[in-house]
Length: 250
Image (cartoon, rainbow, N blue to C red; front, side, top):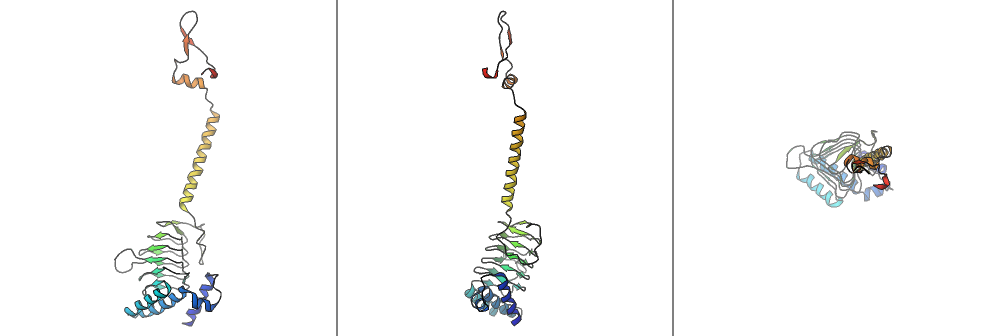
């Protein structure tokens, strides 16, 4: 038990630069308190008790603002930063070295029985306000951007952003430890718009080059559309003839 407490405190110092002392962590960190309550409730839940574990989880929710169902399975190195509004459902499974920020929901999508909450892999960072809804797997080394809504599986070594969540590869480099820089995420919409802008600029440049290389004679253009416009009666015999008009005469 004491080894577990020591590991939980160590994780907070590793991931939160605001932590200054052990006493501060023990007294002032709601994520640490919620995890302690959950370990107690989960121990009772596995022994087929129902009411008492739920009462403990509700007490933890009242004190910390974090709701973790006693049935949820949580691995080692788990850290909830700030934590207000975090909800973790009954059949959720969380791997090792996972970080959650405030407002994260690991929830279900209906009234189905059995496994109905997500399974989170190792070394996963879930940003503020993200919602992961349904029974599917989030792979290892994944980052989920703030405010994202994820409702389908996510492969390992990727980043998810947007509503609904879109999977993008982040620099193509697998992350083997928790990467807390969830502010540096790719934006697939902005990248698509940038590609379209570059394409339009390239097309406009080619059009200008073509116009400069094919300077049209104004008179020839008029004759092409109206061949009789350039004919006037010739002097002497009254017959019509061609007249060469200068561009200034048009």
